Length: 299
Image (cartoon, rainbow, N blue to C red; front, top):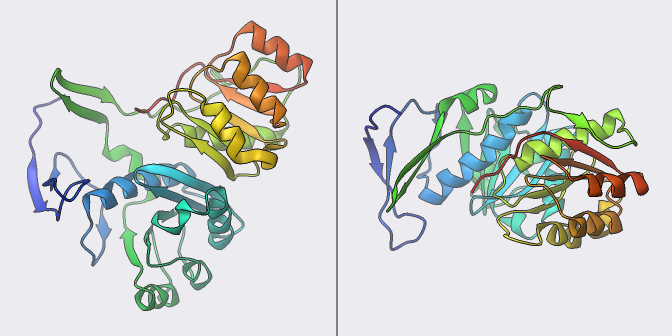
């Protein structure tokens, strides 16, 4: 890391809590965006998380909802309105407010599904959508930087601690034929592989220990930041919708995790690694396991 130089941009109203002072600074090139609203510290955190995931699906209709720096729903759809409905369905309560990121032009139909609790970010907006936003006091940001270039703006993550400053590369891992391996007797269909990749890409940006349950390009449950029982939490949340779904985890799962998922009729797993015991169980129940060879943990 080169010597880090902070260029002051502006004073923020407050930090993550009202009693904390905060400023916005530049240490590198930043994305090009437009907004007439004063973005808060938490807004910027939420925007970053939502757009990180949206950038993985830049060439399709995708909606991402984040709240308090955590992802609450992600979906692809026939159009943006369809994607938004599916993303909301993952966690309808938390979806009432927070950041909503879109990958395509926001139209009137999509805008009508949003409310004043949302902060919207997208590459473009129809005039009718903007009129709805103004009428309903919905804040919005126009992202001018192409989504497929978003990941190139940050190469390092920096965390300042009393023990010293930690610097690590940003997790830009991608699946390839060299690390994507089916280790069970039962093989996945093309549709299952596509759902597995969808779930894995989301798990890459979810706080560890991450479990993402998905089906038909829609998240059914997202467990994040839990130190134990992430799988059980996700299964309880997904409930009956988990039938024939895919489960992505950023850490190897235990026998108990596997059994909990099987009881909820999950049909496929995408994992960094797996033990022979679990492979035997998967073969017994005709389940599918794909291994990636690396974790996707974010702390």
